[in-house]
Structures are given as structure tokens and as C-alpha cells.
Length: 177
Image 1 (tube, rainbow, N blue to C red):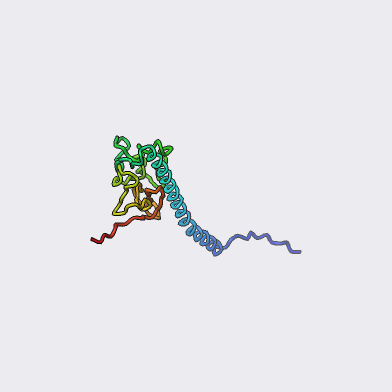
Image 2: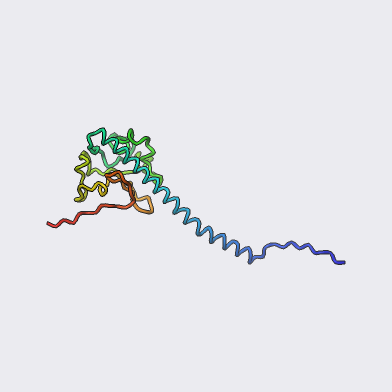
């Protein structure tokens, strides 16, 4: 009578190479998709921050006769004393984290904000805003923007109507003189 043979059957080299190739393909697909998803989530969080800044600005306006604050574009470092977005609107925005874009790796730490203020609107009444010849269209007048274009969709903006978007809605006006 013959004894059953005990063979240890393992993977052949070909099978092992096929499995490795499949795993590498899946990783090659998953990594860029996950990186894109993380970048998109940071962009969305940044747009949320801009909406909060817009709500804080509305509170500021209601206490200041609907006049836009007079602010500097930004500051070089946190020790600067000039009035800027993150110092003047801080009491209206609920905390300094509102001024930090999640995609910003250095500007917030250095200056206290990831965002720039549109100085062309300083001190104006909300009914008198104008930008590149655009008047009476607050949804086209940017007030705050990213300091840099960190997002895959481009630069994020807060507009005078308190909406935020990653699309530039403004352009220079064509004048027919």
C-alpha cells in the first residue's frame, strides 16, 4: 500500500509576480485618488472658513454702519501692529483657526492668516462697492482671497455677498468710450 505523499504546495514565481503586479496596479490607482480627495477636502474646509469670515464680516458691518473695515492687505509676521483681517475680525469669527486654510503649510504660522484682504474696498459703504468697473453686483466683488493658490480648483474667494467660491467671478469691464 502506498502512502499518500505530503507535498507542500506554494506559490510559483509566476503566480507571485502576478499578485505583486495586481497589488502595484491597485496602489497606483488608489494613491492619486486619495491624494486628490484629501486636496479637495482641504479646499472645501477653506471655503467653509471663508464663509465663517463672511459671517463675521456681516456682524462687523452691522456694528459699524455698514462700512467695510480699513485693513492692510496682510502682514509680514505676527508681531506687526497694523489692522489686518485676522486681528480686526477675530472677535466676530469665533477663533483664529478660521483664518487658517488647511492646505497652508507656512503662511498662517508666519503671519497669522492664510488669507489676503482686498484693500480696494477699504472704508466703503456696502452699497458703494466697486471692483474693476463692477458696481452693484456684490456677488462679483471679492473681499478676501487665499494668499496663494493652494487648491486644485485654484484660489478661493470670499465675495461681498458673503458667498465663497474657487472660481474668479470678476473680470475687467469692457468700456465703450
